[in-house]
Amino acid sequence: MTGNADPLSALAGQEHAVKRLNAIAHDPPQSIVIEGGDADGRVALALYWAMRLNCEGGGEPCGRCPACRQIADLAFKDLLFFDGREGLIKVQSVRDERATWGQPPSGDGYRVTIFAEAQMFMTEAANALLKSLEEPRPGNVFVLCAPQRERLLETLVSRSWVVTLAWPDARVNDPAVTKWTEALAECWRSGRGWFQLTAAKGAVDRDLAMAVVIGMQRELREAMSGACATPLSARLAQSYDARGLRRIGLVLEQAQDALNTQIPVNPAMVLDWVATRMA
Ligand SMILES: [Zn+2]
Image 1 (tube, rainbow, N blue to C red):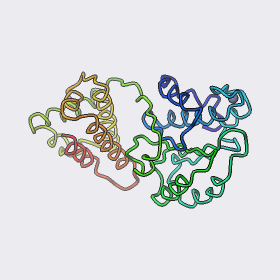
Image 2: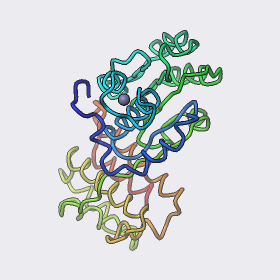
Image 3: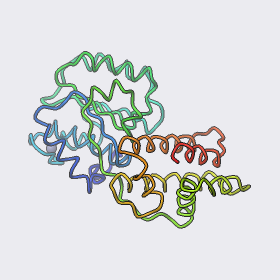
Image 4: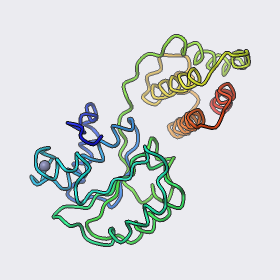
């Protein structure tokens, strides 16, 4: 991100979320949660917010003034950036800034503290942040970015204003993945077919399992948006309300986490776990 010519380029197609932030910029909430989209899009919107609150032009970010340029480089004096993309956000790093959050910002705008991939908080670190949110200091605002609000401490979310980015464009799944999503829809209907697939020796490795989970996420997004062109997306839309669909989203995120860890996992078992929670 640092040194990127235009860190806001990831906001293409996210005009709705940008508009929502602009509408509240005159009286910014102490904490906002940015969910949806992808990790780059979430960071881009968080940086947009920091620029919006500090641009020397006073309106939408000009991208050229010192404040905008320094924020783009993560080098602005009133910007704190915790990067969960690089690993767990540790409690000490949060405690170290508590004195800073007790002070007004050094410039004329707001001190913006961004937690990128805030689901990577250690619970203690989240609790330390919570203490700071409970003692609001004027001029300090916080941004928590995460794939889904459910992955954050409920007490943090309940204190925050939530903005949801549009999901990345739904492309059509690869036929190798479609075979699996259709098998799941069929098993859901008839109770047959899925477990023979995953039980076949060597049928699924970690890469394929990840591709299938991502393919399922794509169909879930279709179901959420009411576009149900595939057996699985149609099944999901019939079976779950919006809240239920969000819960399935969480299951798929957890499956991704399991496949991403260094701990040896059995990819077929991860897919079976998803199937039993979904269907
Ligand atoms: Zn500016």
